[in-house]
Image (cartoon, rainbow, N blue to C red; front, side, top):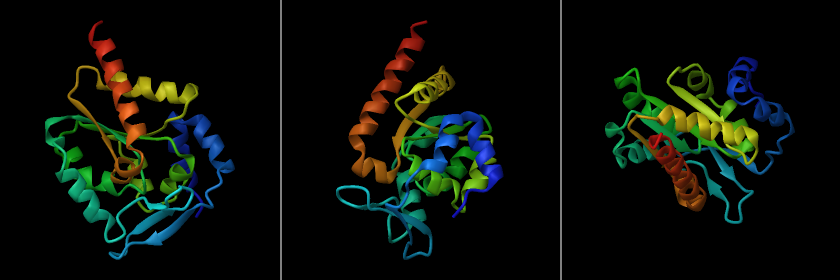
Length: 192
């Protein structure tokens, strides 16, 4: 499914390199599926052990349970590793809308997943939401800039890092490393 040009233009503002690279992404290993609840899902066959990005019995129910398992009411800024198809963002909307100063940033390091999300049913409302941001996390310059944006925005705020349900299951080591790096950056800023 192609990405709507207006969605791509919004993504490109903070992610110019990633936007340019999206046309080169091989996403053949990501297979679109539908959950038992009728929601969009992705089956990632590129992994040694293939995984769904969302619970196959119900993506939204998984997302609601995930939100309930975290103390999000105690923070005003969330950094989430893994966008998936955006179901956990949708589950966080009541928290986000409760206070206009709250923000959520999704960090994603897989361009094929970003491509799938940007062509999903939730992409348009996400990309037009002033309280929500998606940043491509890579090893290069743009990844460093993404971490700096996240770190400075978290400065003197109550914040937390979370992994999406799928990334919490099968990318937990990457998440631990990212979370530690962001905490160290925050500590460095606090000492200024």
